[in-house]
Image (cartoon, rainbow, N blue to C red; front, side, top):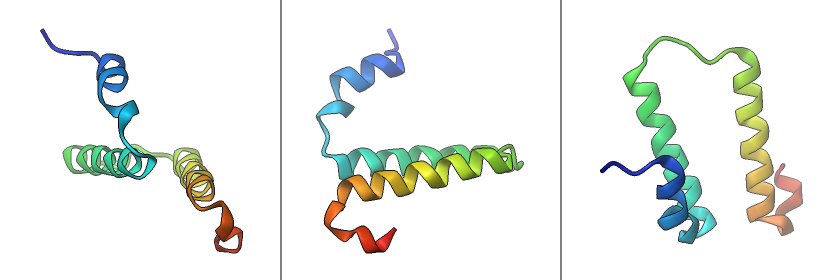
Length: 68
């Protein structure tokens, strides 16, 4: 029986370090972009992803506030 995304997260992903979770999310996004070459991300989606990425980087490296 296939696991749901929630089950995979609860059983595996949440135990990874923040760096590994971020790396996994990058791999997933790269896979999605390869499978669907059409530009389905609108400008708001791209802004949201950029905002999330910057917030995540700030959380990982709070002492490096000048980077963001």
